[in-house]
Amino acid sequence: MQRAALGALGGAARAEAWLEAESRRRGWARAAAPGAQRAREGLVGVLSEGSAAVMVEVNCETDFVARTPDFQQLVEMAARGVLGHCQGASGTKHMLREDELAQLQAGDGGDLLSDHLAVAMGRLGERLALRRAGWLRAPGGFVATYAHGWVPPGPAVAMGTYGALVACGGPAPGPPSPELQELGRRVAQHVVGMAPTTLGTPEDELGGDTETRLLAQGSLLEPGVPLGRYLRERGGLQVWDFLRFKCGEEPLQEPCAPPA
Image (cartoon, rainbow, N blue to C red; front, side, top):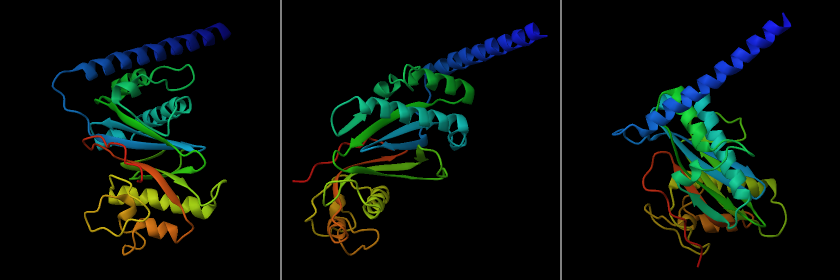
């Protein structure tokens, strides 16, 4: 009986290995199919650890697939792979292209993200893409994050159709207070909602409806006051840099300019 049970287990393992290999084969065939349009649905995933945070965009063809656990697991693997890469790299801001993202490992000594992508395509039956990724570091500060969309909060990797990272610093060295952390989160919400393209300076005056400098835009909580002044008057939160993703957008956002 024990031998039969072990044989059954061995058969199940072989079947699982065959299914994974078949899913990978079908996935690569789907990826190589000519004439297919680029997938534009999907999710943005946000993950932070210490004074760094990463953001990834993974695309699929339909909103239905984006809501599946298999697809969301791929987004989580991509975010964790980027975080591992970020921890061993230099610099405070960096963007990864699709081809660079595909060559990252999903974990320590794990398969490449491109292999996991192929398996997911075979299982889900849609063209998928590891679209892009980026990270921010805030030495001496923290990175506030926000993901907006229909995915309920819960896992360590927040997901939505929009995401933002904001590198912040406090008025004094040391860990940020809960109040400053919450203020940073609100700035990340502002970045998602108002779509700034450059940083500006804390001294910028209030701009108009088409203002694209973050610190010159009216605060969402007090539209008549520029965000830079709003932050200065509420604890002195400093904003050093930011990054914003909208799922499916073109072209990719360039890094924002540092303050003069």
